[in-house]
Amino acid sequence: MNRNYEVEYCNLELRFERRQIQNLIRELIQEGYSLYWSETDGKFLVSIRTGRKLVKLHFEKVNERYRIVGDYIIKDERLSELLEKLINDSRGHAVVKRIKDRQIVIENIMFGEIIRLVEVSGMEHRIIYQKKPFVTFEDMIQAFQSKRAEERIGVLRMELDYELSNLHEAIMEQNDEKIEQITTKLQALRLEMLQLEM
Image (cartoon, helix red, strand yellow):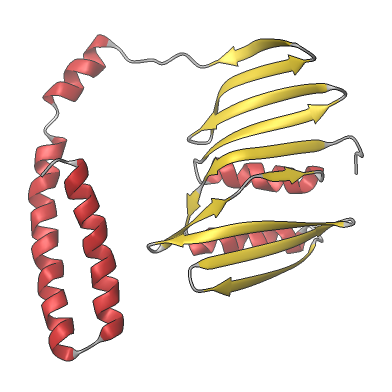
């Protein structure tokens, strides 16, 4: 292990299925890491032993998916590679700071892709790479002419009617678990309705 190796992960915004967390655990075990995990209502914790350090990855349940929470400093190169694979696979967002020999390289990642790369050395910094926004005039016209939102509104109304019908049945059956699941779906539909300004 490189003693000078250190990577800091900030502003992580990764969302994924439970299956992806299980795949991460499987990969960590295959790489020879000593780890344990625990799950409580709405939280999933994976603790990984790296030498004398213990790295705890916190996952928070949001509806039926999970998102990673917190900032992390990783001093293990293999673990860092696995975390970056997770960022890439989940098309997540992050600010990654690589510290090496009094120099910091900062990567801004959006949707799993580096959009900006900055090198900081003492008081000086220089932009190594910056992705340019690529929106053409044709793209703007197409966005204005798009009927996708109008089409989604019609489908959304049908989904809403269907879920309300299911909710009625669940209330009549007094099935609390089903009521909770349907209520969660209805909240997600409500949020989408607000975004579409229905």
